[in-house]
Amino acid sequence: GQNIDQPTEMTATEGAIVQINCTYQTSGFNGLFWYQQHAGEAPTFLSYNVLDGLEEKGRFSSFLSRSKGYSYLLLKELQMKDSASYLCAVDGGSQGNLIFGKGTKLSVKP
Amino acid sequence: GAVVSQHPSRVICKSGTSVKIECRSLDFQATTMFWYRQFPKQSLMLMATSNEGSKATYEQGVEKDKFLINHASLTLSTLTVTSAHPEDSSFYICSAAKGQVDGYTFGSGTRLTVV
Image 1 (cartoon, each protein chain N blue to C red):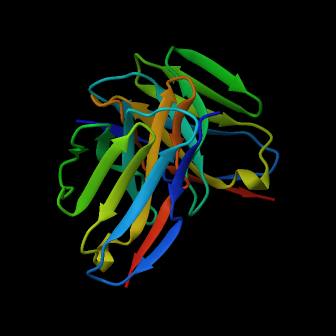
Image 2: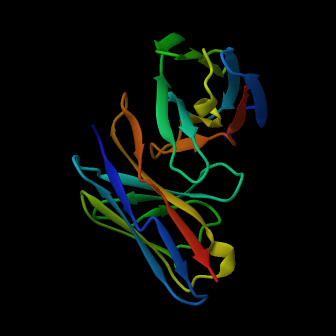
């Protein structure tokens, strides 16, 4: 079956670093995405990993280990506006659709 | 960049009526679009895959006669919720992929409330 796991909620302090983990078990794998979603809005693309390793983009970095079925999203220098849900999604469907995890709700406190 | 326009953003309808949601790729051609549904505090769940010029592929448990999908052109896919009921109230989002590296582009979503 298809399964993507990530923590339900996390809390961090403004200015700190937080790591959101994601493990996946899918029948296929064509890449892993991280999205940010504020309540009531559509997801916003953050990162894409298809090869093992770390991809850095400003305050956000994403890591992938295909052999372990594991990824994490690293957010540095947290800001209040980073409070949102972070969705891990795998392109593993036969039709090219994304399979989403349930999302991690991150709360950034002063 | 790739832009997907979704309309309407919010709609309130009476139980038993039908609602049509449009999803347009503005600056690229999308042979495939995806329709997702998101209930409160839950993740996005794929409803169906919309293919231009052919019938949509529905996920298990999604009624194809209730959620009609039409992908008449390379830039437009529509989702019609027929005979809507309060339990159909949800956030509906479409997406299309221009290119793998750019990620899937999502429409802005439609908040459907059935009263």
